[in-house]
Image 1 (tube, one colour):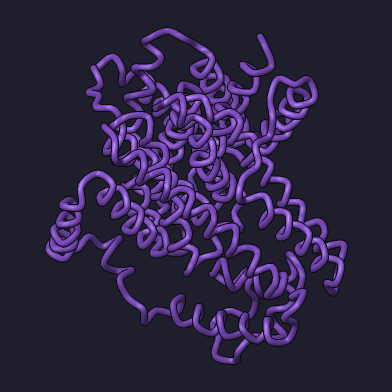
Image 2 (tube, one colour):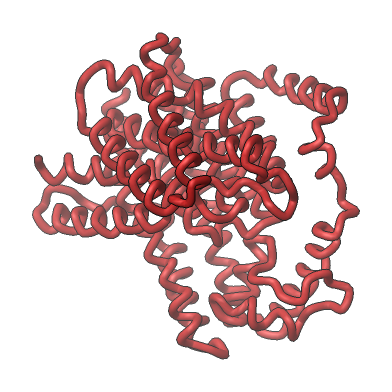
Length: 440
């Protein structure tokens, strides 16, 4: 097997494990970066320049400077290792430029997403994860990480259904998601029996091998099974988001789904009032109990944001240092705040400014705006044509809009799983651009 094929298999396996295991996805990323480096050195691949290169480099440099000026530089530099995840963007740009490979990698996202959402639904409906202090974490250990990734999965699946080629799965095509959900049920049963760790590891390994095998296979049945995944992933991810009781993810989902609707047909936006009316009529407890701004969590966010602004005013250039909000918060905490400590500030932009200073916020905004505009350009270009492979650009645009909106109320990019999914989808518009002549 050539290195190019190995690169595809690794990225597909990585995409499938983002919703399941940060250890597995980071390990696969390290191997994938090494393979790409060998391919570049051998002249088998090249790294394309993108408009994101400058802001990413500037953000990385300023993050390291901020860590050096922190109260505890060793702790800050340790936290800064997350910058290495941004290498996924460049791996994605190289691999996703090939249409067939792009379809298979995004199909792998849905493969892992079915598993994550399936376990979240089991946890939220049968295993007692139905309270605010115990919400379904899926495979990811924390409900915020799980809801953030489920949000991305929902929008990738919805974009595939609404903007991609028209397909209707046959009953036998649903065998793949059924197999994955059977494995999820096995993990849940093993967890109840006290064997959660070994069962989860076996399941993650099985999904890793399955995703790589599907990506590298050429049998038509494999392609048909992949095409059936969004029909299962979309409703499962939506259900999982409702059970997560995570309001920031709900707001992001509304924005992301609206983007898909506009790209598909602006008239679909009329569905939103109908959905709102249905919610008001049915009043599901998991939703209506969270539709308030007067709870302790909402009030605490206001005081948390005020403390974050004080942090920025106190150290506007280099900030408190990456990973230092937890130790710094008690010094800036407002007396009215509910919780005495906070690991982060529940806002992407304020978090970056407080941790790394206002220059870092500027570089972060530069990166975010450039990524969003690139996705918007490609999505609009692809929307002008018939439904087809350009759906991936719509998925990227919807996911970026959703994550950045949800990030106004949650530091979702602080979760490595969410960040990796965002970086993979951010690569899509730049991977599509070199393909323009071939698609013309």
